[in-house]
Image 1: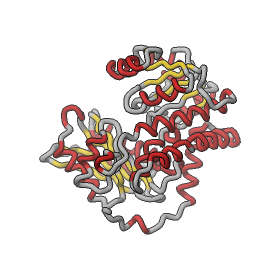
Image 2: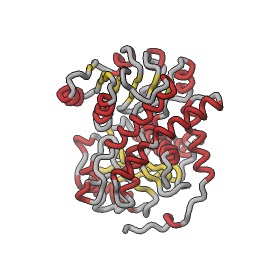
Image 3: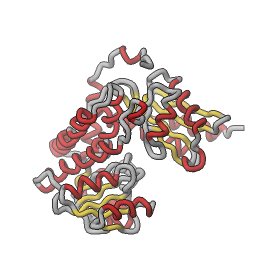
Length: 370
């Protein structure tokens, strides 16, 4: 029997205002495949919710709900500032992808997404890959991040890293008067899907790069290709290492009450979602004179790529749009300076303004699979 107190806790969490008033949250369970998933639609004011599917071994269902609510809200803001005609959505599958991911589970998940009739468009995220989206697309036409062989754009981490690099260039322009990382020391925490591409851009720009990752094989892969890259044991060591830029590129919550006071970098710009562990961290960064490039702004290259896939993917067109993250990040820094607020607050204001100003069309409310 379900614990009533636990149910009340989850339900109240769905409606609490600090989560941004989500439009719809769907709990999904397929007994045959073992699927347990949560799909959250934060807003469809700008169009169908678009966001990836995270496959992760959450400690419990409450933790999964908490994560999907935060992530989907972030997608609303990310898509708005990326200039996309999409609202914010996200999904999480509860389980260890190395142990529980099966074809039957992914097909069942696709059926749940399809049941929303196009209100939610899914893609890859932590724990899911292009091959997984190829499977999901067999039962759900509103799937992006598929392989080119299956009509998709392939790995979205390529343009995610490109967008983070553009945001970092904008931060360098504001901090040091020149939009380049040449001669700067950049520390990257997490060199997986996105981080290893970011290493390439920074080395090409003449930066010195220091990396860490919880997976030794990820660090070994980077250092095998680029022996000049330095590695440290963990993120705690990295934030205390002399740096110009700190780039969190793993899971969220990297900027907290322990890491922020220890930071040596004067710029923070990375690919991870939800980097601020709690409200107030953005002010702590500003009080220390650390320029923070809001995560959901600079890591929007991937969602720009998968959104383009819905219109017949063109890499050059998507890359050109991702390159504009430089201009968007600069505009946020300018708004922050003009309003006397941290960049994270300025980004939220600009995103909320676009969402409020837009009158959604009725076209997408009756989607077709074709």
